[in-house]
Image (cartoon, rainbow, N blue to C red; front, top):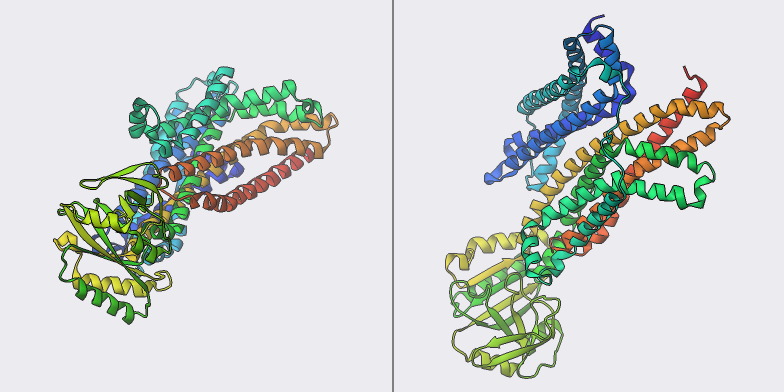
Length: 640
């Protein structure tokens, strides 16, 4: 038998161990290939867009992740089999032969994973191109043979598999035979249980969770803390999540279990002592893989939840920041105002849109090229009530904030020549961003007094209200026609602005859909890698436990009781990383809301998206549990 044949038999003889590693490698190759197909398709690179650059960057990230994942997986497999390698070395195998055998094994796995991954990628590659074409609004796109993606994938992953294998097996082959034959250590052999570290882990993780609320209350802390967190908050959060999660897994869990052993009355009932005491070693020996699984699942849940939630909320968020479907602003003496409004009315009619129209006359404090953008704006209470139906009772010297602020009561607005206006409440927002900034409703006599002051400018806001979700094609046609006819306005030195809300919606949906596409694929890679690590961890646990299981069965323990003990142990080993990932993801989503990156709708969408993710994890555990239970049944029937 040749060395290559020996390596082939090693892999085929232990397919149970290698199958998850191989499948996740296939999946990683497939995702890389899909990104490469999108990056290579010339029709997706329209109008100098950055789609192809974005896809190439995503491909590089997948390749870097593959290096890390393969390094961890190969190291785990090699370390677990080091007794076997020690035996082979004791029987006369040279270091060089050992390296060649391991290289042959991983080359076989790598080559088959690359081929199958590219075949699957070819099948789904054009489908991914069609999805991307829909995102960029291409009505038709042709098939392109993915020769360059095949070349890049084959070369890239072949180099990754070979280099990672060579680097890891080189260190293994240099170990003395006695060290290889000694009892195998476990992943966390250098970690020692410490009650203070357990408390520190809980405190650090809770601190990270608390800091996700900080953006909402920024400025209320001491200046030194505010200045430090303003630039480092993201890094502090990631550090707290990672350090806290690792210490929870390596320290706090054991503090909790030992507390159960000492103080719980249920510990000695129903076989609990048996599975709980054995669980301590299982957890200790799996700290590293459980931590990496928890982080991978956190990244996966965050990617898929944030990307899907944000793309679902685009229209609602844009509508909240831009209250009217079309707004036309005319500043000062605009001699083209009437003609522009006639054009807009004609296009609305031509596209079958019958809007509600309103006109508001604002007085602006300030003048210059950026007039209307950041100036303080005032409108009369009479016109405000005509649009909103609200009729606040404002006295002279009072103002109502309609900038969209949550609470400004008690503040004042200074106007030279008029005095300080007391802000007595908040009202309905009328203008889009950033023209909504410093926008107030005042009494008619107050507005008249402000308009008589020097350095003021008039602004007329023509508001057209209609459902641009129902009339999306008409709104786009209106926007295109009017833009082509009148230009962009103030950016060209004109004294007007034309703001169609559909443009902002389309731009945001375009970017969010691309991020969702990439985020879902990335989350799939992370979940596949986590599933592989969890599978290997549980397989190792079940195998290590088989001799103990046999002895317990000989001592009179029934098969049902043995399977119940095993199922509970596996459930804890499986559930702890998943639960930590869910909690971490929940607070990460809270940070997005507190930082105003997403609206509060994200909370509900997070829970909705979490349900199928948890169902997927539950189904995976049910599959593993039934598979391992069958393995125990077979072993007890035929221990040899």
